Image (cartoon, rainbow, N blue to C red; front, side, top):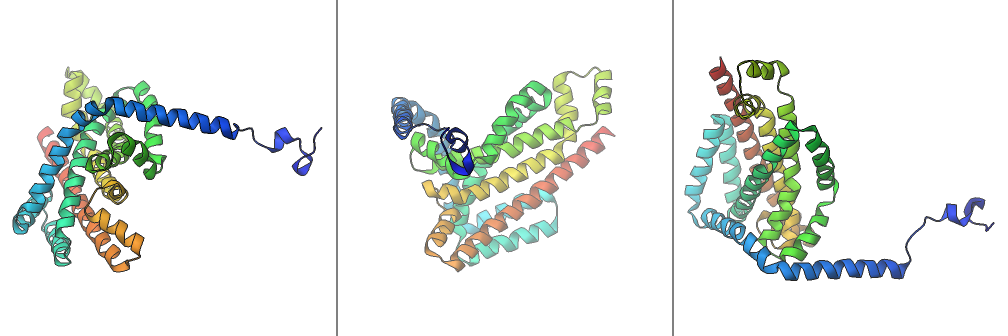
Length: 303
Protein backbone atom coordinates (compact mmCIF):
# COMPACT_ATOMS: atom_id res chain seq x y z
CA UNK A 1 0.00 0.00 0.00
CA UNK A 2 1.54 3.28 -1.07
CA UNK A 3 2.13 5.85 1.66
CA UNK A 4 0.62 9.36 1.41
CA UNK A 5 -0.48 12.25 3.64
CA UNK A 6 -1.50 11.20 7.19
CA UNK A 7 -0.81 7.60 6.24
CA UNK A 8 -3.80 7.43 3.89
CA UNK A 9 -3.62 5.72 0.52
CA UNK A 10 -2.92 8.00 -2.44
CA UNK A 11 -6.36 7.30 -3.90
CA UNK A 12 -8.03 8.63 -0.74
CA UNK A 13 -5.71 11.58 -0.26
CA UNK A 14 -5.68 13.02 -3.79
CA UNK A 15 -8.96 13.80 -5.51
CA UNK A 16 -9.35 12.18 -8.92
CA UNK A 17 -8.96 14.61 -11.78
CA UNK A 18 -8.55 14.68 -15.52
CA UNK A 19 -5.05 14.92 -16.91
CA UNK A 20 -3.90 18.34 -18.05
CA UNK A 21 -3.77 17.38 -21.73
CA UNK A 22 -7.27 15.87 -21.64
CA UNK A 23 -8.69 18.94 -19.94
CA UNK A 24 -6.99 21.30 -22.41
CA UNK A 25 -8.29 19.29 -25.37
CA UNK A 26 -11.80 19.27 -23.97
CA UNK A 27 -11.79 23.03 -23.38
CA UNK A 28 -10.36 23.67 -26.84
CA UNK A 29 -13.03 21.50 -28.48
CA UNK A 30 -15.90 23.17 -26.61
CA UNK A 31 -14.62 26.72 -27.16
CA UNK A 32 -13.92 26.15 -30.85
CA UNK A 33 -17.29 24.52 -31.43
CA UNK A 34 -19.06 27.35 -29.61
CA UNK A 35 -17.28 30.02 -31.65
CA UNK A 36 -17.99 28.20 -34.91
CA UNK A 37 -21.65 27.93 -33.97
CA UNK A 38 -21.82 31.64 -33.22
CA UNK A 39 -20.17 32.52 -36.55
CA UNK A 40 -22.63 30.31 -38.43
CA UNK A 41 -25.64 31.90 -36.74
CA UNK A 42 -24.33 35.48 -36.57
CA UNK A 43 -26.69 36.83 -39.31
CA UNK A 44 -29.69 35.46 -37.41
CA UNK A 45 -28.37 36.78 -34.11
CA UNK A 46 -27.90 40.25 -35.60
CA UNK A 47 -31.42 40.17 -37.05
CA UNK A 48 -32.95 39.21 -33.70
CA UNK A 49 -31.06 41.82 -31.69
CA UNK A 50 -31.53 44.67 -34.19
CA UNK A 51 -34.98 45.69 -32.83
CA UNK A 52 -33.59 45.79 -29.29
CA UNK A 53 -30.69 47.94 -30.44
CA UNK A 54 -33.03 50.36 -32.24
CA UNK A 55 -35.41 50.55 -29.29
CA UNK A 56 -32.60 51.24 -26.82
CA UNK A 57 -30.91 53.78 -29.09
CA UNK A 58 -34.22 55.55 -29.70
CA UNK A 59 -35.09 55.77 -26.01
CA UNK A 60 -31.57 56.89 -25.12
CA UNK A 61 -31.66 59.57 -27.82
CA UNK A 62 -35.03 60.74 -26.53
CA UNK A 63 -33.80 61.06 -22.95
CA UNK A 64 -30.45 62.65 -23.84
CA UNK A 65 -31.47 65.02 -26.63
CA UNK A 66 -34.71 66.28 -25.11
CA UNK A 67 -34.17 69.54 -23.15
CA UNK A 68 -33.43 68.66 -19.55
CA UNK A 69 -36.30 70.70 -18.15
CA UNK A 70 -38.80 68.71 -20.25
CA UNK A 71 -37.40 65.38 -19.03
CA UNK A 72 -37.23 66.74 -15.48
CA UNK A 73 -40.89 67.74 -15.49
CA UNK A 74 -41.96 64.51 -17.22
CA UNK A 75 -40.19 62.37 -14.60
CA UNK A 76 -41.75 64.37 -11.78
CA UNK A 77 -45.21 64.02 -13.32
CA UNK A 78 -44.67 60.27 -13.72
CA UNK A 79 -43.54 59.97 -10.09
CA UNK A 80 -46.56 61.89 -8.84
CA UNK A 81 -49.00 60.03 -11.12
CA UNK A 82 -47.72 56.72 -9.76
CA UNK A 83 -47.50 57.65 -6.10
CA UNK A 84 -49.91 60.60 -5.59
CA UNK A 85 -47.52 61.64 -2.84
CA UNK A 86 -45.98 65.09 -2.43
CA UNK A 87 -43.18 63.62 -0.33
CA UNK A 88 -42.13 61.27 -3.13
CA UNK A 89 -42.47 64.10 -5.64
CA UNK A 90 -40.22 66.40 -3.62
CA UNK A 91 -37.70 63.63 -2.97
CA UNK A 92 -37.55 62.78 -6.67
CA UNK A 93 -37.10 66.46 -7.55
CA UNK A 94 -34.22 66.82 -5.08
CA UNK A 95 -32.52 63.70 -6.40
CA UNK A 96 -32.83 64.75 -10.05
CA UNK A 97 -31.70 68.28 -9.25
CA UNK A 98 -28.63 66.91 -7.47
CA UNK A 99 -27.80 64.71 -10.46
CA UNK A 100 -27.94 67.70 -12.79
CA UNK A 101 -26.09 69.99 -10.36
CA UNK A 102 -23.06 67.71 -10.31
CA UNK A 103 -22.96 67.41 -14.11
CA UNK A 104 -24.23 63.83 -14.30
CA UNK A 105 -27.48 64.45 -16.14
CA UNK A 106 -26.51 62.99 -19.52
CA UNK A 107 -24.91 59.89 -18.01
CA UNK A 108 -27.94 59.44 -15.76
CA UNK A 109 -30.26 59.60 -18.76
CA UNK A 110 -28.21 56.93 -20.56
CA UNK A 111 -28.44 54.73 -17.47
CA UNK A 112 -32.14 55.48 -17.06
CA UNK A 113 -32.86 54.43 -20.64
CA UNK A 114 -30.90 51.18 -20.15
CA UNK A 115 -32.65 50.38 -16.87
CA UNK A 116 -36.06 51.19 -18.35
CA UNK A 117 -35.58 48.86 -21.32
CA UNK A 118 -34.08 46.08 -19.19
CA UNK A 119 -36.87 46.34 -16.62
CA UNK A 120 -39.57 46.19 -19.28
CA UNK A 121 -37.99 43.12 -20.88
CA UNK A 122 -37.41 41.41 -17.52
CA UNK A 123 -41.00 42.01 -16.42
CA UNK A 124 -42.35 40.85 -19.80
CA UNK A 125 -40.35 37.63 -19.45
CA UNK A 126 -40.71 37.10 -15.71
CA UNK A 127 -44.45 37.69 -15.32
CA UNK A 128 -45.72 34.87 -17.60
CA UNK A 129 -43.05 32.46 -16.34
CA UNK A 130 -43.99 33.29 -12.76
CA UNK A 131 -47.67 32.70 -13.55
CA UNK A 132 -46.77 29.35 -15.11
CA UNK A 133 -44.77 28.37 -12.02
CA UNK A 134 -47.66 29.38 -9.76
CA UNK A 135 -50.21 27.34 -11.68
CA UNK A 136 -48.11 24.19 -12.06
CA UNK A 137 -46.03 22.48 -9.36
CA UNK A 138 -44.16 20.55 -12.05
CA UNK A 139 -43.22 23.77 -13.83
CA UNK A 140 -42.07 25.24 -10.53
CA UNK A 141 -39.80 22.26 -9.88
CA UNK A 142 -38.21 22.76 -13.31
CA UNK A 143 -37.93 26.55 -13.12
CA UNK A 144 -36.57 26.84 -9.56
CA UNK A 145 -33.16 25.21 -10.25
CA UNK A 146 -32.71 27.43 -13.29
CA UNK A 147 -33.41 30.51 -11.17
CA UNK A 148 -30.97 29.27 -8.54
CA UNK A 149 -28.24 29.09 -11.16
CA UNK A 150 -29.13 32.53 -12.56
CA UNK A 151 -29.00 34.14 -9.10
CA UNK A 152 -25.91 32.40 -7.71
CA UNK A 153 -23.72 32.43 -10.80
CA UNK A 154 -21.31 35.40 -10.50
CA UNK A 155 -22.49 38.28 -12.64
CA UNK A 156 -19.14 38.53 -14.42
CA UNK A 157 -19.67 35.01 -15.76
CA UNK A 158 -22.77 36.18 -17.64
CA UNK A 159 -20.58 38.46 -19.71
CA UNK A 160 -18.42 35.68 -21.15
CA UNK A 161 -21.01 33.85 -23.32
CA UNK A 162 -22.89 37.09 -23.99
CA UNK A 163 -19.79 38.80 -25.37
CA UNK A 164 -18.83 35.73 -27.41
CA UNK A 165 -22.30 35.59 -28.98
CA UNK A 166 -23.15 39.27 -29.36
CA UNK A 167 -19.79 41.03 -29.24
CA UNK A 168 -19.08 44.31 -27.46
CA UNK A 169 -21.82 46.92 -27.18
CA UNK A 170 -25.10 47.87 -25.57
CA UNK A 171 -27.09 44.80 -26.57
CA UNK A 172 -24.83 42.27 -24.82
CA UNK A 173 -24.85 44.50 -21.75
CA UNK A 174 -28.64 44.66 -21.91
CA UNK A 175 -28.94 40.88 -22.20
CA UNK A 176 -26.62 40.35 -19.23
CA UNK A 177 -28.68 42.78 -17.14
CA UNK A 178 -31.94 41.06 -18.10
CA UNK A 179 -30.56 37.63 -17.18
CA UNK A 180 -29.52 38.98 -13.79
CA UNK A 181 -32.72 40.93 -13.11
CA UNK A 182 -35.42 38.48 -14.24
CA UNK A 183 -35.33 35.86 -11.40
CA UNK A 184 -36.83 38.16 -8.70
CA UNK A 185 -39.80 38.91 -10.95
CA UNK A 186 -40.41 35.21 -11.57
CA UNK A 187 -40.07 34.23 -7.91
CA UNK A 188 -42.24 37.01 -6.52
CA UNK A 189 -44.94 36.53 -9.17
CA UNK A 190 -45.05 32.86 -8.25
CA UNK A 191 -45.13 33.68 -4.53
CA UNK A 192 -47.78 36.39 -4.84
CA UNK A 193 -50.22 34.19 -6.76
CA UNK A 194 -49.69 31.22 -4.44
CA UNK A 195 -50.36 33.41 -1.38
CA UNK A 196 -53.84 34.40 -2.55
CA UNK A 197 -56.38 33.21 0.01
CA UNK A 198 -57.75 29.78 -0.90
CA UNK A 199 -61.24 30.82 0.22
CA UNK A 200 -61.26 33.62 -2.34
CA UNK A 201 -60.35 31.14 -5.08
CA UNK A 202 -63.11 28.80 -3.93
CA UNK A 203 -65.59 31.68 -4.03
CA UNK A 204 -64.55 32.49 -7.59
CA UNK A 205 -65.02 28.82 -8.50
CA UNK A 206 -68.48 28.87 -6.92
CA UNK A 207 -69.46 31.78 -9.18
CA UNK A 208 -68.33 29.81 -12.22
CA UNK A 209 -65.18 31.80 -13.03
CA UNK A 210 -62.89 30.34 -15.66
CA UNK A 211 -59.16 29.93 -15.09
CA UNK A 212 -58.48 33.09 -17.09
CA UNK A 213 -61.08 35.07 -15.12
CA UNK A 214 -59.65 33.87 -11.80
CA UNK A 215 -56.18 34.90 -12.89
CA UNK A 216 -57.02 38.39 -14.14
CA UNK A 217 -59.87 39.28 -11.76
CA UNK A 218 -58.78 37.60 -8.53
CA UNK A 219 -55.20 36.34 -8.33
CA UNK A 220 -53.28 39.13 -10.05
CA UNK A 221 -55.17 42.01 -8.35
CA UNK A 222 -54.75 40.46 -4.90
CA UNK A 223 -51.06 39.76 -5.50
CA UNK A 224 -50.27 43.28 -6.74
CA UNK A 225 -48.16 44.31 -3.70
CA UNK A 226 -45.96 41.25 -4.18
CA UNK A 227 -45.81 41.84 -7.94
CA UNK A 228 -44.74 45.44 -7.42
CA UNK A 229 -42.07 44.20 -5.01
CA UNK A 230 -40.89 42.01 -7.87
CA UNK A 231 -40.75 45.05 -10.14
CA UNK A 232 -38.80 46.92 -7.45
CA UNK A 233 -36.28 44.13 -7.12
CA UNK A 234 -35.95 43.92 -10.90
CA UNK A 235 -35.16 47.63 -11.03
CA UNK A 236 -32.62 47.33 -8.22
CA UNK A 237 -30.95 44.36 -9.87
CA UNK A 238 -30.81 46.24 -13.18
CA UNK A 239 -29.21 49.26 -11.54
CA UNK A 240 -26.64 47.14 -9.73
CA UNK A 241 -25.77 45.19 -12.88
CA UNK A 242 -25.33 48.36 -14.95
CA UNK A 243 -21.91 48.87 -13.38
CA UNK A 244 -20.78 45.37 -14.35
CA UNK A 245 -22.32 45.70 -17.82
CA UNK A 246 -20.23 48.82 -18.39
CA UNK A 247 -17.29 46.44 -18.93
CA UNK A 248 -18.77 45.43 -22.30
CA UNK A 249 -19.50 48.88 -23.65
CA UNK A 250 -22.57 50.12 -21.76
CA UNK A 251 -22.09 53.81 -21.00
CA UNK A 252 -23.69 56.04 -18.43
CA UNK A 253 -23.12 56.08 -14.70
CA UNK A 254 -21.83 52.51 -14.66
CA UNK A 255 -18.90 53.40 -16.90
CA UNK A 256 -18.04 56.33 -14.63
CA UNK A 257 -18.06 54.07 -11.56
CA UNK A 258 -15.82 51.58 -13.36
CA UNK A 259 -13.39 54.35 -14.28
CA UNK A 260 -13.41 55.59 -10.68
CA UNK A 261 -12.56 52.09 -9.45
CA UNK A 262 -9.74 51.67 -11.96
CA UNK A 263 -8.24 55.08 -11.19
CA UNK A 264 -9.12 55.20 -7.48
CA UNK A 265 -11.15 58.39 -7.85
CA UNK A 266 -13.15 58.43 -4.61
CA UNK A 267 -15.20 61.56 -5.32
CA UNK A 268 -16.11 60.50 -8.85
CA UNK A 269 -17.23 57.08 -7.65
CA UNK A 270 -19.22 58.53 -4.76
CA UNK A 271 -21.08 61.06 -6.92
CA UNK A 272 -22.01 58.51 -9.56
CA UNK A 273 -23.03 56.08 -6.85
CA UNK A 274 -25.23 58.80 -5.37
CA UNK A 275 -26.89 59.28 -8.75
CA UNK A 276 -27.62 55.53 -8.99
CA UNK A 277 -29.05 55.53 -5.46
CA UNK A 278 -31.24 58.55 -6.21
CA UNK A 279 -32.70 56.87 -9.29
CA UNK A 280 -33.22 53.62 -7.39
CA UNK A 281 -35.02 55.30 -4.48
CA UNK A 282 -37.29 57.27 -6.80
CA UNK A 283 -38.25 54.13 -8.72
CA UNK A 284 -38.72 52.16 -5.51
CA UNK A 285 -40.97 54.62 -3.70
CA UNK A 286 -43.09 55.42 -6.74
CA UNK A 287 -43.65 51.80 -7.73
CA UNK A 288 -44.48 50.71 -4.17
CA UNK A 289 -46.99 53.53 -3.81
CA UNK A 290 -48.47 52.66 -7.20
CA UNK A 291 -48.93 49.05 -6.11
CA UNK A 292 -50.71 50.09 -2.91
CA UNK A 293 -53.00 52.40 -4.88
CA UNK A 294 -53.91 49.62 -7.29
CA UNK A 295 -54.65 47.27 -4.41
CA UNK A 296 -56.93 49.78 -2.68
CA UNK A 297 -58.72 50.44 -5.98
CA UNK A 298 -59.23 46.71 -6.48
CA UNK A 299 -60.59 46.25 -2.95
CA UNK A 300 -63.03 49.15 -3.34
CA UNK A 301 -64.22 47.79 -6.69
CA UNK A 302 -64.76 44.32 -5.21
CA UNK A 303 -66.73 45.76 -2.26
